[in-house]
Image (cartoon, rainbow, N blue to C red; front, side, top):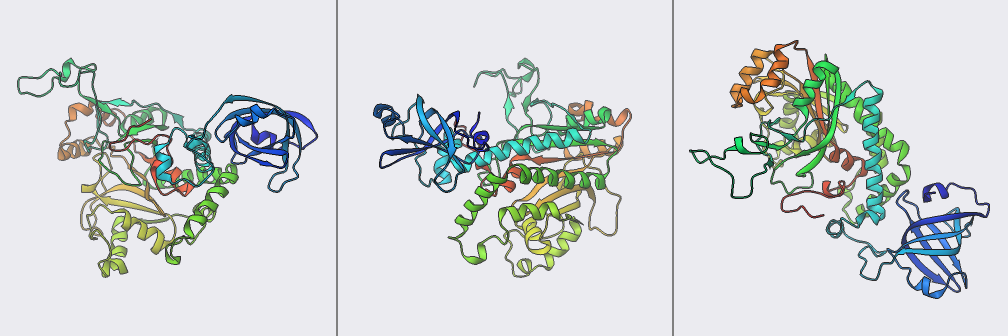
Length: 480
């Protein structure tokens, strides 16, 4: 039985066996108190060792970090903060831990804990984060399953670049510095394992569209990779993406799906991760005491999550957003780091201004300039209301993060898609299978991508994306 289940029992002097890792051990007169945690809950259970019950040699071997099993009797606790405790009758030591164990019961910096990622799960903070991460992942699958979607496994190794960015990790069986060459000096990938140049996927979207053109509603949830040299608190080289694709959905349907989905998974965390969220909220409140009053959050973590769930997202076009930004005080006083103007790719500071200062709620921006968006997005009809050509794109912007979802209605017209592919310089031969879906029974369809780690970042209130994935992969870092 796990500790979370034992803590729910009514104490009736029943026999229990508690297994876990020692968080603290302290003595008081002739009694030793051992706090154990097995990762099933943020809460520890206390084992009480009365004088003479356990031999001294065994007790000496028990220290913070050791793994033990305590057999004893479950009784009502005389101490505060816990309803039950275990009166130890015997202890089995599975593994000792000496004084060099890094996770001693004191405050550790997040930077230090990243260097000890193999052990940081044993801290309260990271135990809470990764239980919440599990709950959110489960909620993702539950939401889509309950709404008639099929889970599609798209390839991790691919010959296509869905984003057209070219920032991909190459996959090859060639030995380093021994790749065969063509006459012009280029690598002869025809002799490689797959017979062509391949890379790790940046997105499952294009393959997901193929599934949607037969199954109507699909979603992917898997690892994706970006070879971007971005050392920021918001970027990873390896992360997980959730990407639904739905036949017969237009941009409005897509926005409705995105809003419904993120509200559902956040509500699931609120309903099922109460203890962990309260712990992280208190951690944040403690952290903010050292900040000036004007830099402290207006809402607590739980209030922020409830605010997202309980309010409709603001919806407006990119053009309307640019007008708001141009009239804003930061733009007027030249306080934005990046200049505002129609046609720019909005930066995080612009997105956060719209969300946190202007609307004070999540925002969905639509109808972006064609030139800053991917080739597969459906083009809008030319309008006098915009300075240039736009596409039916949408981004969902959250407080503290900026963009958390990016999506669009896809271009379903073969001729328009071919024209756009040629415009951006993609070889149509590499996407013949994608183009076929526009030749054989094309249909309106839409989809989006949600970076899972950014969702976990928002729900946990953490400030660095490296702290919400077990083993972060970043430039110059592939430890563990």
